Length: 325
Image 1 (spheres, helix red, strand yellow):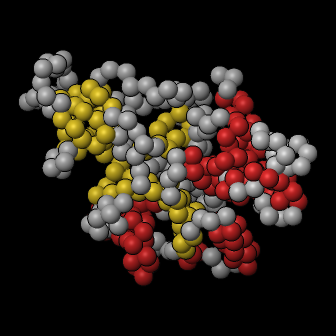
Image 2: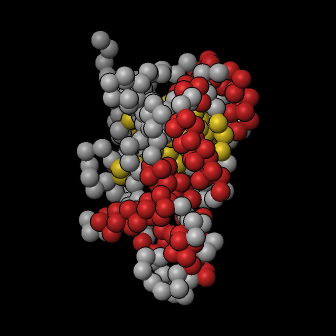
């Protein structure tokens, strides 16, 4: 067994090289430079983002400046460049912390499944609020069409499609096991830096393999006993696509973090609420029990879906709870 690479203090006089983080596990990262050279690096220093208590100092998609590794050593990241956006989840085993899944993305794909496993609208709504908060264009890709044949499954498919299309989210329906869908997905991802998220077993790795088989990402079948997927990706990683662009594959997400959102701004990230809130009597309306609330009126008319409104209320509760940390 070979010796483990060590990092040692580097001279501050050495030039710093700029690159993008393409893999991150704890404090150890892989950084790619403009000429596509890749370097294993460790993080030195404290990189804290105001208002965030994170478990990871840098994330996939971060632009950093680092000292090149010397022979037998690791490179050392010294600077984190400003992020234009990021996507969070609640940190596993750290109730008061969040984990940054990805940063600086051009667009996001929410991989939604009607069955095996079933994606809840609650999870989908949190994902969409997270991307709305940073103006990240988001596409909903409904996967595993090949599994949908029962009337209740098809009814659920129609319900989900109508729900999100009505509020402006593009819907793409595919089966990641069928090559005929590859051109449609390739067109969506080409020349973009895309974050793809969803539950374990939703088919993220299978979908990526569909458009770029040479990547040969590990996939996993759904457990017949729990009807849940097993994690095939244990850390976020960026992959270069043959068609142009990059995709960030992430671990299956159970819960997304909302700790960086303010209570009064949450409704801004629900498009159907945002377009009506100017008609509310009070400029700081919470859309709960105030008189002359345009959102409440729309809810009663069926113009705001009950599941979306319920998610809004649950997120408000989470924001209130996190503010007490």
